[in-house]
Each structure stands twice: as structure tokens, then as C-alpha cells.
Length: 234
Length: 234
Image (cartoon, rainbow over all chains, first blue to last red):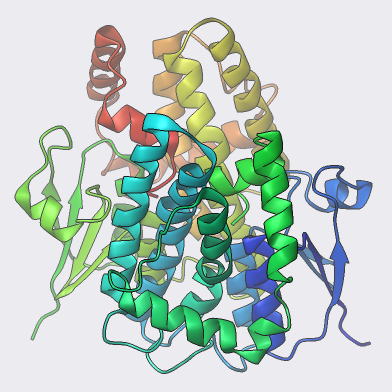
């Protein structure tokens, strides 16, 4: 019996992209099912009754949720082209920085874009601090995983490269000054030039329209809240 | 050269206990260093400059923080008596429920204990919902890991068994009604009777005094905030 893999996703979710990129680079065929996160389907609610969020990975009769948990599952189930390094300490570091970027950068960069006044200033300061820590980690290397452009950490925090530029434009803020963050800037170009990444990312224009719409309505809607909280679905 | 293992901890932290229990059950000798989380030492700030929190694991010259990341490191470095199951799906489930308990139960049970009025009611409702999900997961089994009383999930969410009863007494709330949660209640007794757990837990009286003191001052201090947020140090 052929193995069946499905991913329930949302077209611009950084948590979903992790899962999609991991499956693609391992050559695992899967069916992608787009979910409307503003009007959740019975299918989504049944498959992820606890968090009611994407991504959901369905592998035959097994259902796995939470993008970091899914990444580990993918790496253990399809061990070709390993995502995580072999060394326990390097694995720990990869896991640590992946969580760090979600908890300390995604949240604050989002707040810098969507809030105003003092809240915005505080968020911007925290964003810069988080970016400095990531810059420090990347300095002197081509990729977080050394020469491995498909390592766990690339997949896990690759969202920085497509979402931060969109938020920069929307908020008229330069988060990623190339002089201040040369390592991240160089990594970003390489990441976005990667054919596997290119073929999956939505057009910049579509992302801009989507996030502009969100700001215009000043609706801290489900997706934005998910991004800002970064607590569960990642 | 003999391997050197140190743990920086705080005597009642559920995040620290995870690490201590994991090392003890694997028979890894370590030096325990108590940190004052209200007056952080230079040592802690230097070893964990990013989050400035316990636990910190120091293994020779390697420093690992974040209790879940540390658990994986321990399991990979000292593979005897494995914490995580072998099967990728079972591993995914263990990781999922460990995070779930931190994010959905610790936060809400804490809020139920420390807040008042509507906030308390909402938190209590969410606490019960989280406990019901955990009860459902445990139902029909002795331990989360089947017959393995030292599995990853026991270690990861064992805090329920010593902290919830303390919070129950402080808040005069019964979270764990044995009739409503028979599986958790039975699991709790077995867990607390386990000699390895018994020898590490502080006396009930000391925990009560500590948490009463916190409530008396109505200080949502660093530790409580950490427990309530459950975002980073776990």
C-alpha cells in the first residue's frame, strides 16, 4: 500500500512553510490542502481538535500537529537528507535557535509592524536585539548548518527571509539594515535564490496586499494573533 | 578525563525538575547549583545570556538551556534508559503533550490560583478543559508511556503531581476531582510514590509557605510570571 501524506496549510503561514520545505527537500510526495483559517473547516477542527490550527500533517492514519513536532517527525520518518545535525550539542543548538526566532523575533517584529507609540518602540528595540543575537550566531558561516543549505535551522527560521521584508515595507521600518546585519542579509539572498524555496513562496505582491489589508482593517485577526503569540502552532 | 555535568536550578521550578529527574534516572552524576532567581548571579547571566533563566545544563564546555531542549540532549547523549519512545509517531505524541501541558495547563492553573473574578473563572474553565484532554490521553494506561514509568512524558509533565495540589490548597480550588479525573489521580499517586521522585521533591510545607508568601504579597514575581507565561524556559 502506498504511503499517503497530506498537509493542511494556509498559503502564507511561516509554520506551514517549514513543513512544506522539509517534505520537498526530502522528496516526499504529498497532497497540499489549503485551509481558510478565517473560516475553519470541519476537517481542520476534526484533525486538530486541540489547537484548531495549521499546519496539520496526515501520514496514512497518523495525524501530527505543531510545526516543530512535525519537523522532528519528518526527519525521523524519512531520514534521507537529514535536517538535524548528528551531534547532540549541535542538535540542541538548532532546536534552541529555532524556538528563539519564533518566540523572540516573530512576536516582536510583528508588534513593531502592527502597533503604535511606545508599544511599537519597545517592540522595535526587542526586534533589533533578537536580530543581533541571530546575526551573532550566523556570523562567519554561509548557513546556520555550516555548508548545509537545507539544515533544520534554515527550514525553521527561513520565514525571516520572506516575511520580514514584507513587514518592513508595510511598516516603513528597516529591520534588516545590511550594514548592521551583513550575515543575515547574505543568508537571505542565498535562501531566496534557492529554487526549492522560490517555487513555494507566494508572489511578493500577493503577500503585500494580504498584509496591507490586515493593517488597513487594523484587525488583529486570527493569523496575526497567531504570528504575534507564536506560542502554540509552531 | 571524567565528564563534568552541572545543573543550575531553582528548588521548586518544574522546568528544573524535568532535567534533574532525567539525569537521575539515567544515572548521570551531576553537580546541582542553586540559583537565586530573584537576584540572578553573574554565573547565570553569563551561561544563559539570552533568556537569563534556569535550568541551565553544563556538560564539560557545552552549555544547553531550555528544559525541553535539554531533555532531548540528555536522551541523545546518554542513551541508556531512553526517555522518548522509538517510534516516530509516539515520539511526536510525547513531544506534543509535553508542550500542551506547559502551554495550556500550567498557564491556566497558575492564573486560576493567582487571579480573581472573571479572569479566574475563565482560567479555571480552561484548566478543566486542559485536564480533560490529558485525562483522555492517559485513560486506560498506567503511565503515558504505557508501562514505562520513566518515559519522557512522565518527566516532562510530572510537575502536575506536585504543583497542582499546592495550588489547589492555596486557591481553595479542587482542580483534580478524583471522580472527574480518575486516570490522572491514579497516575499522580504512583508518580509521587516513586522513590526517585520522592527524594528530589521539596517538603510540601516548604512549597506551601513559598507559594503562600507569593500570594500574600500579591507579587506576580519573576517565577510566577515564568510559570504563567510558559513560553521560553521550558
